[in-house]
Image (cartoon, rainbow, N blue to C red; front, side, top):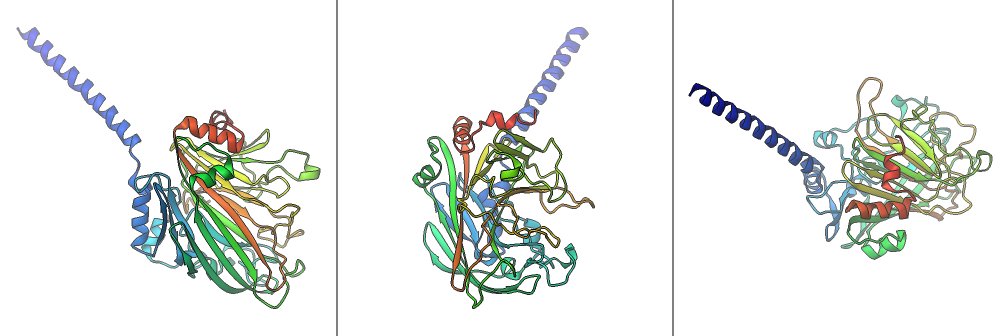
Length: 414
């Protein structure tokens, strides 16, 4: 009798333990499948609206959130409605603090407008004679905290305007005007731009047209410094994000280096690789580094794939032909201040003291240096697209746009 009781108790305990393990596995599975609410579009838009005015452009499940108070910045977007993934990195801690920081207020956002150059003898981020050190670096207020004026607004687009005065490191004054328009794109427009079959794919896409005008009475000349339109996008990293940048192949004598990784020191071989006509760069937010593609190598498209969250991001930028002079933003007096890059990608990571702003990663584009006479303008346009949905369909989209499959991207460092 005692043996029977012991056997029954043992069976019950074993069954209970097995059941607990199954429940635990189920809960873990559900946890993995459930999107963190702080990474949902609806959560982030509601958060932003507590602190600043937000404009939303919407069509179906596609939506873009824009803040006029931060230079018409696209803060985030989604391809799957309020509960969908929020693509832009947002600095919640800074925004909720209400603080104003001394050198820059990095609110985040997946597309913001800056002007270059950042460093060098023609920098607009350093005053004349100052050392090129962080303590002297200052983001111009009109690129940081001053709102842009809304001039037009519809269901699918919004246009902003701002006029400003600034001076570069060499003492050259600039009177300028900025017109910025953001347009939500539909399925047909995306197919026309990319040739991608949109069947079975969720998407959000928008174009920004950014016009810089010389509104002063003096010509902008190379000898005294030029400006450029500089677009920066901050996105959510994961343990498995890979940036892919197709480049023109050829020898360095004619086209320059395939990739410039000297911004913050050389990048390790397990994070940066050249394979065929593509540059591959890890964007996991765990190691600080930046790469650049010069205008002779740039092929007007770059992208990333997040294997963890199944997100394909594309950035399209038509660069003007026969324009090879781009401003150089290196923090030093430069031998060639017009040898800058046209495309960039940045991966955030801890600083030497262990602190970190993000994590996030960036995709960036720049216009050529703008040698403008009074009244003349330069317009720099780009298209940002996020795809989610069926992985096989995303694989076909990657092959069509970037020239490589998702398996090829995933296996590049194996």
